[in-house]
Length: 314
Image (cartoon, rainbow, N blue to C red; front, side):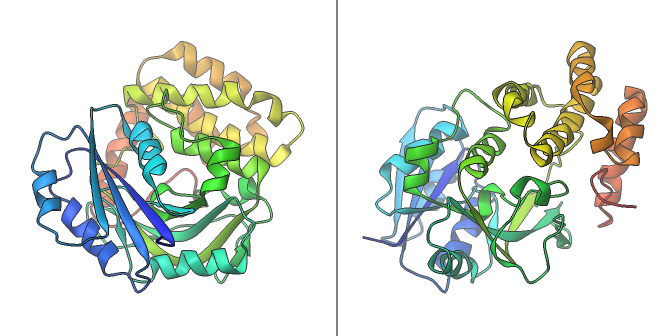
């Protein structure tokens, strides 16, 4: 039985899947299986996978039911007790699984293991993440997951490993959510179990069409469910309240841009403004037409490897 099962959901990623799989096959840690869930792809992705001759790769094909169903299906097929997640257009450095497994062997009772990661917009230079109160050489349990995740998230889908027992006790990805399902899972885990983190960055978040922070995709409406699910927890947990208010801020801007002013006003009303920085409070008051212009400027600057974010300090 392999030590780690790697779950890769796949939908029309013919331009990326080979490079993603090669980054896995080149790992220094080799005791793994790769489970790919083809979620109804209509491009050449499957043919590309079939051209890679490695017995550790298993491909399953399902009807298109979304990434949460694909991940859950892959978890059900996994032969290992440790589940590493990877999206079909992200990349790992060769030491990534060693990085995760070292965390696990050092802190075997955690509910989730996460490594640091880089962001790469438009295949540009690597942009470092920033975590609140976490040292650059951190290797161990995160004292307060929610406080640490108020700039960038400690857990990111292509840089985590989760024991099967965590899924058995916490539950899997919410298949009714098309957006925010990963955040929902991280919250459920962090509220009930310890999270271990390595500050060594060994994964790459490849973003060719940046839909982040100020995104206004229709699927992002699903994130409203997050605030209903955990509202009671916020009452007695101040760091979680701040974490959720920052999520509310992000979704509120999305709703304003989309013209959904009812949701915008409802979210804004629930935010404790003391939990936002000056830029965030200013943006919350800014008319949607100017937010759209700022979003366009943000994307232009990213092409010059300049990352402007309301979650970063001046």
